[in-house]
Image 1: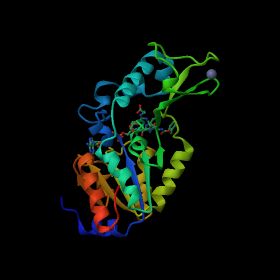
Image 2: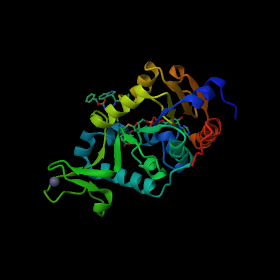
Image 3: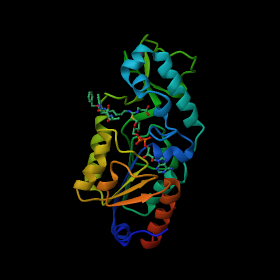
Image 4: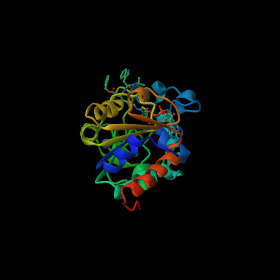
Length: 250
Ligand code: BV8
Ligand code: ZN
């Protein structure tokens, strides 16, 4: 695979790397994306499932949907794309992941600094008293679980119309403003404010590299767009980085 010389030069002298990822990086782990032809939103209406009013209207249905996704995620493994990002931690001064994904696969692949902009499907909390629950803390009975205080338990996931976790978003913005290269991997870049993160990097002077199967809203604002599967492209980039930086990539 040939890369632009400009990109190789950036790869050679970069210190700080940020990976901004979306559902596409988990597609090769068998987890559906949202907006592709067979994406989740082609079968279900996000407004009927991924928002707070839907949850209040029909908690059992929303829980059933998240339990279905949890099952798929628990049966999935990090793929070569997640692993390549984790491996690159040994070739650069810092490698930070800012992800829109809720599947925990970056951490499971070995990435140490992961900011989760839209929450994490393993975490839940009580609407009434705020008590936190891990998904393993209760056996799902087909009904939305209740806390021992009687309050309803919800997934710790950012739904449409909800604010993103402040700390994760601020840390992602800071990392984007500081980095030398930002890789934007497997996202349609249409969901805000998360989709702002690559724009922060671009305006701060980072070299923005998009890795996607197709053109997106971001493509014309990236410095470099590499078309293809992240599970194939990222390992090649990781090997390239170790060669030209003369660093062992684990
Ligand atoms: C907010 C839930 C402030 C978690 C998600 C009206 C009212 C309120 C807000 C809005 C509004 N209108 C617009 C908004 C803002 C809204 C928004 O941006 N809507 C968009 C759709 C227009 N944003 C919000 O609501 C956010 N909050 O604004 O709060 C506020 C508060 C009150 C009132 C007003 C404003 C909250 C956004 C978070 C919503 N939660 N999901 C869950 O169940 O998962 S969004 C959902 O989309 C996921 O979280 C996902 O992470 C996110 C982004 O999708 P992608 O990751 O990009 O996935 P997608 O399928 O789209 O693309 C995959 C890409 O991968 C494709 O390009 C494909 O080509 C590529 N690909 C596929 N395979 C591969 C690959 N690439 C490489 N290799 C492969 N193998
Ligand atoms: Zn409670």
